[in-house]
Image: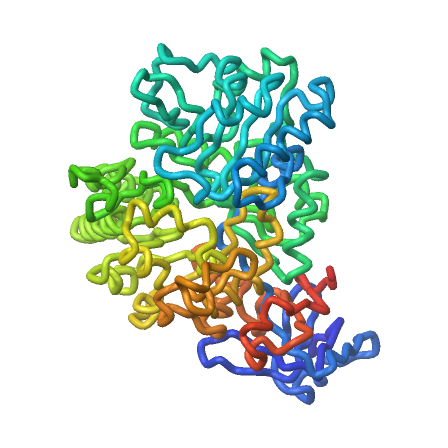
Length: 562
């Protein structure tokens, strides 16, 4: 007996996002799956007495979108912070901080944490605590920069944290910059959330910020993603077991309307066994219908803006010609990590931004895969490289050749927060960043994401906002100086990505590193019934209007959620 559909969606342009780039006219849904995708007549053969017919008014239909790298917990935990207006002038910024503190006494706001200031506001020496002290001294103050890879403390904060010229620091982040007398300047690189030094400050002031995500704090961002048609995400860093449990509990209660793919942080080579054990523990305890974890996350280098990325050339601003930035794991160690993870069946998602880091990652992957296969083993894991901001031309074809997956945050393409990297890379190299076209031409799998990390940039998680920026190379909020960059277009103009390529990466390709390609990513029979109906045809409107697109319908597993 033929199945009876619960729904038949018709009069739509269903972009299936399959290999043949086909369209369909209609789709029949039963339960949480597509049981027919094709013509209306084909779908009507599944029509029964209780089938609901839904007219989509001729609109474009895409598979549900996949955000391949973002940070829901970090955004949830930042909701208590002060979202500052955008300032280009330091005095205006500090005047805002002073006025806010005057309006909110210490009893109400014992710790001022403000987001965000532009990375380009200061040179390579960074901001100084004394400048901040001129405006606020009655409480600790921390100002975060746009990249989230640096912050600026006043003297009160450093005092309460116990950081002075005699403080012995470990080799791990955060890194307190110091002057010639070894006094901390107030500028800190890679300020990790929950650092122990801040715990000492919280104890001293008798106040602690929220450190655990709750459904109440995380739901606004998840709802935001759902509103734009995102039905799956990879967490850039799952922030502890409590976060895995939160998503698991939400899913078991039927309140998580998306797939959640977690990642477990690898601190360094010495902690590999510990991280593997953590993943297996989370797999055993927190795997549900839509929540899984099979990926380890590692930071191979830092950022180009801070000069702590791993470069093939000495930093442009280093007169000695000896500063090539920093790499957190050598090639031999990374090779061993990959071999071990392959034996455990655990994928690896690596933060890498500069060309030496990219080359080391490719070399390690090639060696690890070769060693496993030469020993008669089977290579079974994925390595996905996130960001890949600067790649040497000689390495552009390697992802396709080796089977390495690339992830790119589309809304960065216009120059968002990145101009500080010019000091370290030089103008010529900066003008060749963010170019993935050569990788795509050689057949690499490129996926796309938002990588938003705080409340100050939450709205940039809109995938259509990001797609327009990568299609135009013009930032919609912070365009480059048009006198230096005609039309505010970031070079190279040839690096503009096609809409079709990005849709593929947000759908069919996005499902691959998450190992969900049998369930999501395309609109086909047997796949889960996920889709988004757009009010404009993204393939046939001017690319400068992509950011105006709004979904009219979002379906998650056969349920209308928007």
